[in-house]
Length: 328
Image (cartoon, rainbow, N blue to C red):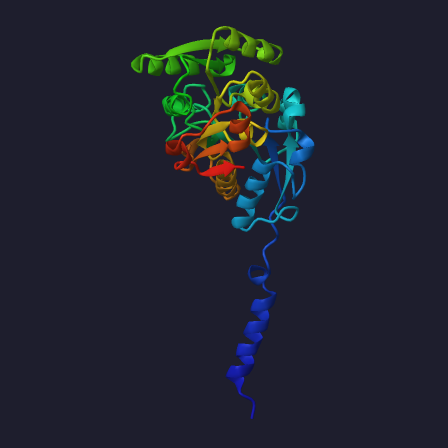
């Protein structure tokens, strides 16, 4: 005898399997993400295994969230060689842009689009620079990570004086994209009765002359920020610092990776990795205007012992014990 309840149940299962609501949901379209960085040429940022360390960190963050390159998203990179035409990204129907490079690069993007979400990686001061109304509620199409550049200026100067206690004058390089740096450094130097020298660099052609100015003024040490202009010339600056025999404190590790002496600042690779969380939120419906801008939580002090030996500089034990990494 046929079990009617079993037959009816089987029919129901088959009907459910073929119903529209039970079919697998259509795959989400492949997201197109612009990448803007002054950390190297566009070729080093291309594909699923880019040579650029920051972009690799971003892709690692995406993988940690379950996104697969090529299946779920692709990137459209613009590096140091393409910054002048970065505005063209606004015409490529991108879902969002992950961008670093300081105020100048972000300003180009701000002029180019008010609709494409822009995720900042390491913006020096996004509120005062006009990219957000506040950290808690950006209010426009910009959100992401700040860099705390100015807040750490005093700490960098302290470490530099500890590293080179005999330096009577410390030169401070700055450019028009970070005008706030010099007043902050000057104010801190005055509280310590230190002599600081302001050296403005308006374009890349003035970098070599800036070192001559510092040497001629008797500077015994140098502070260099990671502004757009200077960061994009990291290799040149590290080489000139070595030739000028000026112990130099930088803001970010990439300067040391190309031969610089010591940086203290936010872990830039960690910031790029965390940028993936913003991509995830926006792809899932969040609006950048309502996503709070985060500040870095991971900082690093790196010592390049080879650069120190070339300068004839002995790293004090008090600094060595605090170093997160020592490059031999």
